[in-house]
Image (spheres, rainbow, N blue to C red):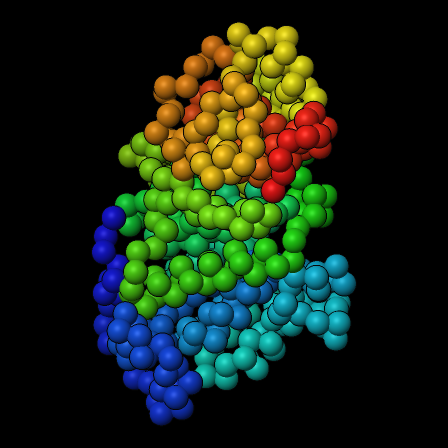
Length: 398
């Protein structure tokens, strides 16, 4: 991976800071890793935030406050009352407005020294490449698979680093997809979208408002590191966060040589509307991979373990300190970050049941293993928390 500590993303002379900017950003300038040169690189940077919602709100606010010189906001949606629980760019006064309009007003008030660009049409197949090439760094705050695949593919073609964030109930993840800098892209992790209805969105499953602040702020931090040229960004690493347990983990994400978007024999050459129409996922179906369900309830998992123990393997992907608190006898412990190392070593002739605390991390591992060719893998919905409530009421909980 290239060393980005010296701002290699940007060439040429950065604009000088004026006296007002030096005062405003003095706490950055005092940091040896940033200094005046790093703050000037931030002023020169152009960052596009895609989605002015739960993730885009904290990300954009911190990028604006940090002094990113040109900040773009892309979103086609309007502000609704249910957004206000987590989308801090907006208020009661802006309900019904375009999210981009509402966001731009808040961001200009946050920092009048920067330029805010409004893209109220959002990101589309028609505008994605032209839009992305006019920015240096992309921040993805979207919440649906069709958008994520389109944004990923356009970022690969435009050769722009993509700061990815996603949420599921109480868990979140952050990474930087940048094949042109030696890392993977989104399709290296998930070559194809899950079946429709397999993974609920926040409208169906809910999301903790403050969790958006954690993940969105981490996305802003990654973009700031890339722009100013300090530290090591999350290229080739997936950072996971469990809000219920207040714990972080890291999963190695190597590039996939067979990736259709960024691999050596990639077939991606252009963006086609029909590709992303199909990736909205077709008719909902609870069964995939020869009728092996993507998710099982804890009752169904217990029944399988009791009646077909020789054909089933329960894999606990929590961290060691979590397993020390409670575990299910007979389970195999492999922390989530070590799963890529085990690809090819896990038994392909057994039904793999993946377990974590509440089901978020294990769902990602399930999708990861399915994408790597394991056909009989299921997530244990609700995780060990649901197991403790429904199967073993005396089990320790955390």
